[in-house]
Length: 164
Image: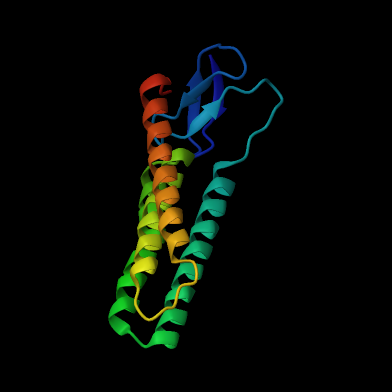
């Protein structure tokens, strides 16, 4: 048995002797891991959490700034609150996922699915003369596709890979 640390939660994982490069999921947080050769390091779980938290904060701040610009430009408070609630989902859904699971495919799905919905809402928002409104619809569909693709990869790994 070889001992390793999970890159998602920091838990010590006992892995059977396997070839280098074999993949497995952490039993606690579903973080996708690969068996490393002796002497090779991996990013600590604290760096993973800090990077994810800062990235989610930046995405939420950018989305909320767009909502504030919409409110100041159009003065429509109802649509501001609708867009702000959808923008809040950009941070809340991935944060909820990050608190329980640390799988990057699932985190991407939790970010791209609300982003697709937000793109559709921005297309429907009144008071803006969109020069390229159809591109928002296509980008919303693309983000939804990426979100469902992330869910597919997470479920595929969950069913196929061992959980140690």
